[in-house]
Image 1 (spheres, helix red, strand yellow):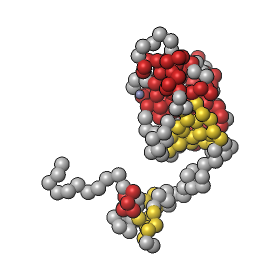
Image 2 (cartoon, rainbow, N blue to C red; image 1 turned 45 degrees about the vertical axis):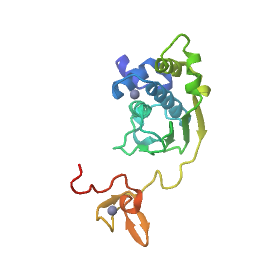
Image 3 (cartoon, helix red, strand yellow; image 1 turned 30 degrees about the horizontal axis):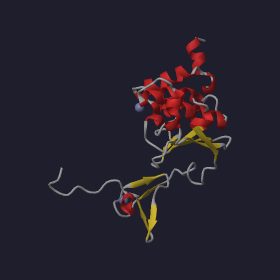
Image 4 (cartoon, rainbow, N blue to C red; image 1 turned 180 degrees about the horizontal axis):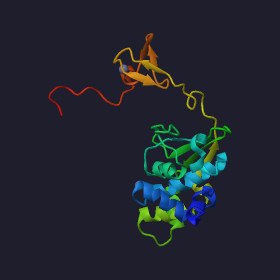
Length: 207
Ligand SMILES: [Zn+2]
Ligand SMILES: [Zn+2]
């Protein structure tokens, strides 16, 4: 076994932090405070739910992320969860938080970045004038309790165990998978037809 494979198979919390950041950056494309924060969140979340080897765990780990930002990529890169495998769930809450779920064991922990971590960052990166660089440095060394809030949670019924069913929207006729339909006025509707859409039809003549 080569050393590289041995490292990749080690629990996140036991791997060199620099190497985890490198892996996240390779996936994300640049080094930013979000990569460091996402790595910290992934290490903490996996440890708290008892998933030491996320990349091998397959569907054993599901992560609900509450923001579509840099840190989300770091979590995906290190844990192997993805939208396509249905192991990464994006909730558009605009919050720097993620819930890690050990599907087999049932343990779930919500890990969020503390709001005061940003303010505290300069004190953990003395001499760094650039705020962004200070965050990158500080988030690597800040004690976990200063950087993250860790909250044991129970995932509400229906969020993990959607049945593989398909129905048709009674308004637009498009198929809806995994019980994502709405019922309004006795009709089965997709979310856009039910008023929860992110798009509307483009008026003629407008680009
Ligand atoms: Zn970034
Ligand atoms: Zn519809």
